[in-house]
Image (cartoon, rainbow, N blue to C red):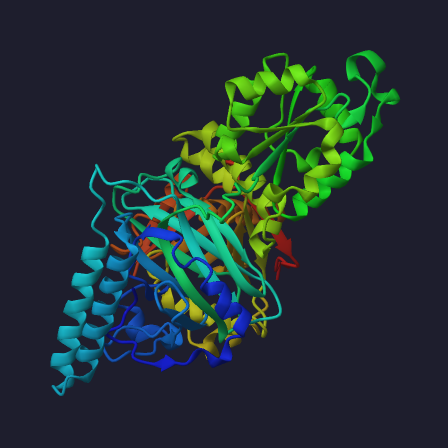
Length: 602
C-alpha cells in the first residue's frame, strides 16, 4: 500500500521496457502470502513540525505534510505485477520510503483486495467536493488510522514470512545503493541493516527472514526505511513488491529440484593427490573441477567443501590455488562427511534436497546418502557432467550473479553480531563508521544551509543560518568551518554536521548534527578530534558554547562525556571549557578522514 489519500497521479507503463515488465510478472503464483506495508514518503532529516517553517525544501502536499518526492508517489498501472501496479518515485534530497513494520501475512488474493479497497477509498477522498480544511482533516485521520493498523504486530501464533522481497527497476545507467533498515521501537535496541546494490535494469532482492530474526523480533513494533544513498535530485526508481513474503518453490513438469549449492571433496576430487601424504607442492588441480566451480558460481550456484583433512593445511592449499573466495562455510575435519553436509545446509539455510555432494570415494558418497537421503551425490569421475545436469541449469539473473557475495556479507554480519551480542559499542565498531571532515566552500555551502535549517535535536546553538550569513563566514579568516559527512557499512548519510570555531580563543561557537547519526558516537569523535588539535597547536584551553533546550538536552550529554566543565552562562548560552592539561580518551568507534582542513592561527 501507499499514501493513496494524497497521491492521485497515475501513468501508463509504456516508458518501461517490455522485458522489465515481464520480469515484474515472473513471480505470479509464486508468492503464497505477503504483507501489505503502508509505505509513505518521508525525510531522513524530519524535525516536524519546526521544519515546515524553516526548511527551504519544505513543499506542502494537499494535507499540509511535506512532499518529499517530486510528483509524489506515482502509480504506474501494471497488470503483470503481483500487486497490479508499480510506484514511480523521483527522489528529492533526503527523501526516503518509510513504513511501520509488521509481518502479518495475507493470502495473495486477500492482499490484492486490501490494496484495491485502499486505492478506491483514497480516490474517493481525493475527489470529495468539500472544503479544503475538512478534506485535509479527513485525509489525515484516514492515513493515521491506516498507519496505526499497518503497524499492529502479528499474533504470536501466526507463521512468519520467508524473506523481505524488494522489486525495483533502475532506469539509470549506473547502480544505486539503497540502505534498508528495520529499526525496533524503543531506546537501545539494535537495528537490522543491509546495503542493497540496485543495478541498472530489473532487480529482485530477497533478504532472508532468518537474517532479520537474528537481530530484531518482528512480532514487536518496528519501522522499515529504504534510503537511496547520495542520489541526485530527480533520480527515478520504479518499485514493485516491497513486502515480507512467503513463496512457494517452482515445480516444472519434470519436477526438477534446482541446485543451490555444490559441495566438493578435496583429495582426488578438486585436485589429484592426497594433501597429507603428497604435500602441497605435489598436488595438481583438476581442470574440469575448477571450470565447473567458476561456471556454477556465475550461475549463482553456491559452493562449499567437506573434506577429511587438517583444516589449516587444507585452507592453505585452497588459498594457494586461489579458490578460497568461492567456498562458503568449508567443513574440514575428521568427522563423518554427513555432519559437514548437514552443517552447510544449516549455515546457508537451504534444504538438503538442493545440495550436490561430489567425492571420489564411493564409501563417502554412500555414507552421506544414508544419513542425508535427499542430497544428490556425484562421483568425482563424473565432474564433467555437472554443468549439463538439469538441476544446475538455473536461470541467471543480476541477483544470482551476486549470490555468493550476498552470503559472504551475511556470514560476516552474523559472525560479528554474535560476537557483540547486546554490546552496543561492539555493534558500533562493527558498523565501521567513517567521518569525513572538510571546510565549508562555495561548492558545499548550499548543502550546509539545508542542514542548518533542519537540525533541531542536535543543534547546540539554536542557530539557523541563511545562505548570505554562511557565505559571509567564508571571508572571516579567524573562523574555522567544519563540514562533516558520514558513512558506514550500511551506506552513506551524506552531510550530517557543521561546526564553527573561532580560532582566536579558541571557542566553538556552533555545532550541529543530523539526527540520523544520533547515538553513533559521531559527535564524540568529532569533538575529541578538534579539541585535541586546537590544544596541541595553540597550547590553550578549548571553549564551547551550548544553548540548552529540551530538544537538545539528551544529545548535550556529549559535553559531559568529554569532561567539559561549565564556566558560566550569558544570555542563555552556557560556556564550557576543556582544560589543556586534561587527557582526552578516544573510544575508537569512529574513523576520522581529513580532507584539507586548515587550522587558523591568526
